[in-house]
Length: 187
Image (cartoon, rainbow, N blue to C red; front, side, top):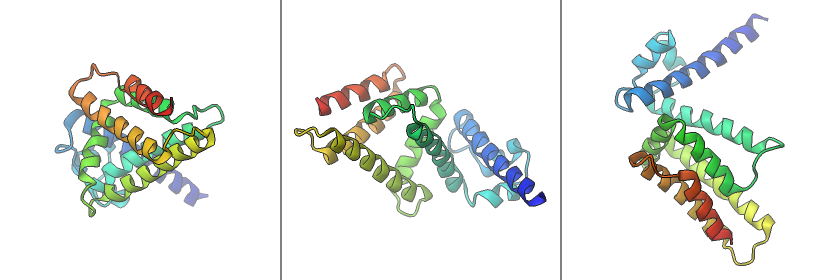
C-alpha cells in the first residue's frame, strides 16, 4: 500500500511543480523562471525538481503538454464542442484568461524551431494531431470545395498568429478572429 501512496504523492508533486512553473513564468517571464525558483516555491530541493524534469526547457515543455492533455480530455468529452474552429476559438478564450500560458506557448514555438530543443518533438506531434483532427472533421463533413489539408494548416496558422498579435495588443478578439477564418474557409 505504501507504493501506491508514494506514487500518488509523486504525481501530485509533479502537478504542483507544473502549476508553480506557470505561475512563475507569468509573473517573472522566461528568463527568471529558473529551476531554483520553481524548487523554492514548490517547497522541495533543486534535486527534487530535477528528479521530475531534467532541465528548464523540459519542464516548460511539460507545462504545455499538461495543458494540452486537459484540453484534449475536454475535446473527447461526450458534450464537447466538435467543430475545430469553435474548439480553437474556445482554447484562445482560455488563453486570453491566462496570458502566461499564451506567452509560454509562443516562447516555446519559437524555441522549438531548433530540432535539439525539447519542445521540437512536442510541437511536431501537436501540429500533426491538430491537422489530422481538423482534416478528419472536414472529410466527415464532405465539403467538396474545401481543401482539407490546406484548411487545417491555415486554421492552425491563424490561431497561432492571432495569439502572437494578441500578446502585443490584448484588445484583439482572438476567438472571433479564428471563428471568422474557419467560416471563411468552410463556407
